[in-house]
Length: 540
Image 1 (spheres, rainbow, N blue to C red):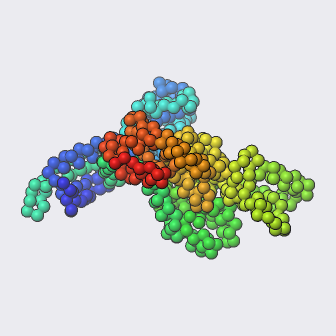
Image 2: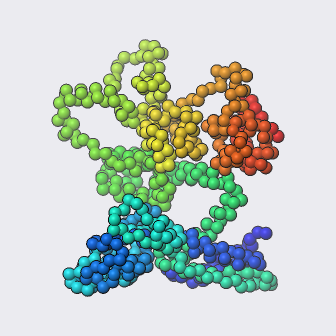
Image 3: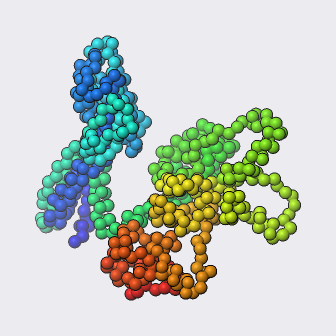
């Protein structure tokens, strides 16, 4: 049964707090089905913000009384729990309230953070009863879903005197629906769903309704196609690639016209060209001042795709390092420059990310091919692995890897591009915290710089019998390291069935992989393609 062709969500009435909507036409019974499930999702799963803790000057615990304040601390805490906040970040923010004198203290006294907005500034918090009265508090606000008890909000690294609160984060206060018959042509056996959504003002009712529909859609889709979970990251990468090739004025609508003209004149025409430049390089362009660069960064922050591109470590987001002025450089003595030169040569690995070569340039041409090979590659003093010169000309940040991948590399001691290209696929696969999408991302980014990971031990040096034995005894982990992507859900199925090697996987066969192991057709094709390259075939 398919949804009717003219199925539509209509807005009957809407303001900042209440929205009335209809969904029609629906097949019989679908009004209650959709209305009930949507109501439960709206009341439990929409993200919102609320206070989770408060620190009040001079108050050691919540059962205290403050001189010059009519309410006790318990009453003030109850008032604060009614505070409605809209947040644009997932990080905990601290809002400050500082009041003095004889007056009524409301939420309007709270100094908001750049990412927060007080929705109900008229909220009564306390009453100061004398001109000498003071009240200062720090209110910690977080963004979560549903109801969270005080025990789950508590954190150990906060000072004594912090009063923790339970919190109802959902911005949806109430949802009501009813179902009635509707006329389609001359038929009355169809239904109309009427649904009312009441919010606290932190989020528009329609936005909450659409988010609830999206949550239900995502759940049903993944239940039907669990392999989509593994492909989500690939879709994000593809979307990013589409955005990076956009012209500057399309990707950043608010870019100043003069700045845009100067950037295009310098060959910076697409969003990728801009993101791959550091801010100091942009400032070095003639006609672009520091102020113009700041305006450019502000326009970039307001770009429609900023949330997507800010997840990656592009050079333009790197913090600027203050460089020595020309006067200080000119004041150095000749012997100091020679000493610095020797130091740079001794610590060459620290400067491998810069394109400037500290070695002296010779006017003589290489006389032999052996000499030319020495120029093409450089060998690290602590290792015999030969590294391409290109790897010395870039930093690992130039790859623009995702934050998750950068954290993975740092956790495993890889902090430079040279260290990365010295690792093979198998070595990276065996590192702590490895995920299939990490190796795919790394190789894709390296290829853009004409680089690649170190080669794994090849089968070419083995005899035919040794090669067949090595492949049959190869573990599933090593198979994945050889560019065979197997989703995590499929890997768990293999572990449950105690299938540890390629030989055991070949014996299982295609049909059993589909029925017993629940492998997708895409995964089976990947495995089959790699085995065919090695001279093996899956059992039908």
